[in-house]
Length: 60
Image (cartoon, rainbow, N blue to C red):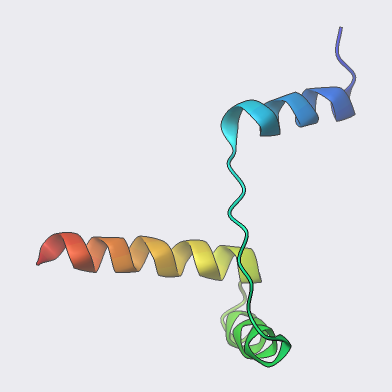
């Protein structure tokens, strides 16, 4: 039987793909402030921005 940590590690390996993203510290601060103003995490904001851009692109 898996313990929780091992289960989560295996889940992440099987289901998720990490996307490295490098931004300047200043840009990160700007993104963080923008996300916080909308009660979002940076990760949540980036995912939403990607989804919205893809939706706009597909509507063209």
